Image (cartoon, rainbow, N blue to C red):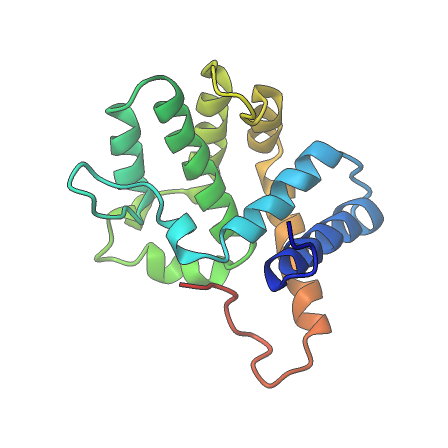
Length: 180
């Protein structure tokens, strides 16, 4: 494994920022949750990770309403993963890019009346109640804590974004950090 590559540098950047914001600035010493959130940031810089839930025809699903419908058609680990993704998706947008929600919940969108915070909490709760047989799966107690304190995690993610923007003194200071 190349620990000096750009991918690992980005992973370390998010891990360091997450630890700094949650532990030093917010007083939250919860390593499993902080690790989960830094991993979420790293995963979601790739647009294909944001849109990893697919309909039966293979079309990527980018609206919470459709993801909820898709979860209802799945069982076991697959259902747990869709609900976990809904939690991650809503937490990411609510925390990191809340200004994008206005467009994502516009009048022509299916998510027009979706409350991302409530749906994120609900999705994490549902995912935490589904037992998994998968090795290396995120523990149910982590998912439950994500739902229980959704607003705090979203606030922390906003603070992480503020910190990375503060540190970025380039001309594209407010660009969205997404890679296709």
